[in-house]
Length: 287
Image 1 (tube, rainbow, N blue to C red):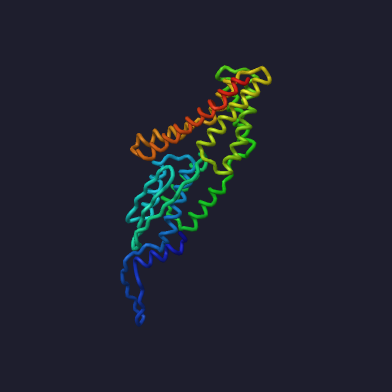
Image 2 (cartoon, helix red, strand yellow; image 1 turned 135 degrees about the horizontal axis):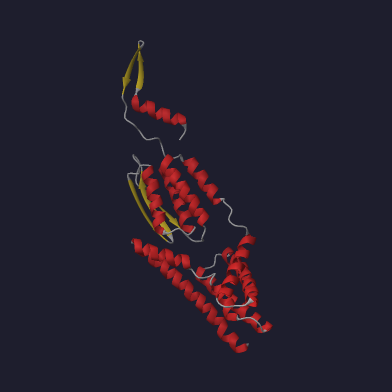
């Protein structure tokens, strides 16, 4: 809040000066909150909740953050309900009508850096209650944050898959083939994300791809262990974070969001298993 606004509020609260014949009479006036656009403020709060939810934060954290921000702006009424696919916020500032806004969530990704930045922003808002332009500027800055470069993600995929292949008893041939399969899987995953395909269908296709890659390479090269290669690649697809967040939500009492997260994680695991079986059974007969 600008310094000038603080002085204006101070003098409005303490005195109104009337000049009459050189004499000054002081009259105490009631305090009024500075003007705040309620609709835009609720929209900004929902933007913060959306950033958290789409970056892998648990539902309980999203609701707690929204409630704390609303309380810092002295909302007379604040009710928030968040699940994996939507956030509903009902709020009312002093001398404003009650208002409800809904934010639909369509996609998710794991980005703990965004979660950390939004947490820092929410603490700043609760402490300083800045004006709307400040909040909007910070939200745009967080959205504009660049993630890891593409080459680093490809390298990470290859290293993780090949390391798991070695961990489960593979050799150096399995190490190399698992890395190549993981890089190929990441390339296809980027394309599937661009066309906004369903997460379960994506898991099914990627599982089928890595299974076919492992069987073909081991069959043509007559070397390596296809099971170790497949296991190393499937470890990249397992929805462990969604499963853990679902359990945590159930423990803290968020039954709906916890149940949805668990169902989503189990369905993705089923899709991974189906993708493996659909390719493995016919190719084992052919090869």
